[in-house]
Structure formats: structure tokens, C-alpha cells
Amino acid sequence: MILGIDPGTRKCGYAVMGKLGEPPATIGIVDTPSLRAIVDELLRAYPIAVIALGSGTHAPPVAAQLARCGVPVRVVDEHETTLRARARYFDDHPPRGWKRWVPRGMLLPPRPIDDYAALLIAERLAAVVTP
Image (cartoon, rainbow, N blue to C red; front, side, top):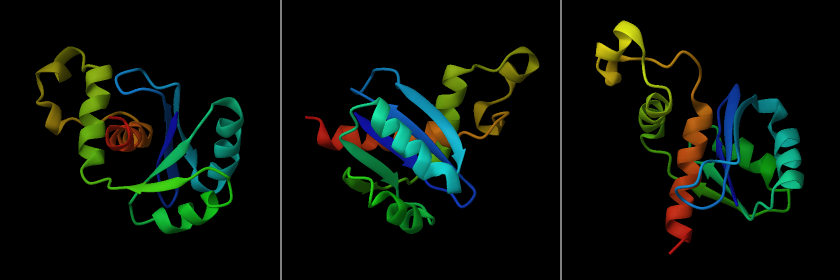
């Protein structure tokens, strides 16, 4: 399994995924200072082989936190993950009512989507690692 992390200054998204195409085992958003505790819980709960860490501006401090967790950390390009995460969110939660007539590119999700970005980061690593 792969743990994807979208690092941020205030909050981080996380997602645990198995094989490409399968739904994630778990996803969520946590404040950045609490990330290490959540990662420890996830490592106990799932057989995580690698952590895919997004290459955003806050990646170096998060990578330093994760370096001591005993699982390899691979930095993954997170170019356009926010835009793609928004599209993925609306695929999972289609707009209703009058909003369904608004182009999706103009809609904003009603909540943070860092967890969806983390899933995309994990999927990018899985696509490279898995034949």
C-alpha cells in the first residue's frame, strides 16, 4: 500500500491506497503539527510500503518529520494536483440543483480537497512503481 501526503503549511491531506483503480482505504485532512501522529496510526493499521510526498513548498519540513518513521519516503511531483483534485471531487460529488449547469471549472468545492490531492499523489507514484 502507498500513503500519499499533500503537505501544507497549516494542513496536510493524506490517502492510503492499494492497487490503482481501487477505492482508497482511507483519506483525510489533518493539521500539519498532528501529521506525524496520524502517520504512525496509519502505519500500524495498514501495510504501507512507501510514502508518496507531494513536492510542494512545505515538503522539506514534512519530509524531515517522516524521515524517522521507518518507511521509505519518495517525493512526487504535484504539478496540477489541486486542479485535478477539484475535478475528482466533483466526479465523486456531482453538483446538484442550479450548480449542475455551472461549468465545473468555475465551481469551488464546499470543503478543502487536500485529501483528494494526496490520493492523486499516491496514484502518481503507483503508476510509476506498478508495471
